[in-house]
Image (tube, rainbow, N blue to C red):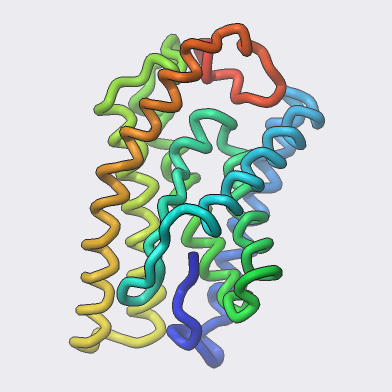
Length: 225
């Protein structure tokens, strides 16, 4: 996952340090809240799992440069449903950082933009989940409609943030608008695929109800909120 180097440069990139820092601070808040409820061991175990998965998503799953960024199958809603909001946020932030440190050091100056682009839609997804999923419904019982709403929120948020950074950095030129449109169009495929992945993962989890209460999984996966 990366915003193309040079898309936002000079003094403009300072904004990304502020947004990225704010997103990471909010992630820390979620982690503290989760640790109080489930204990520190649970948040550590789940965060290690999500970090490994996100790193794999970036490096193993197909990804292609399109327009102003790359199209990835990041599966943010899947991570949220299986591991919870805080571990998902930690995994996205650390997985992105590891990718930059070991495979794409040219991405590190854009880390603030990229981490904002990945985390803020996750926070929005968390809010949507609270509104559309009844408190007595465990995640394994989600419908396709609910899974699609979560995926569309997350992936649509990514597209919106990428478009923001592109317009912020390069303005409203015809070439820039075309590149953004190409990126957004390519992400429609991700929005179509991710809900199906979510439902497949949830169906597999439903067959493993013996894991109810496991510190390695989101409690809401099997139990009502």
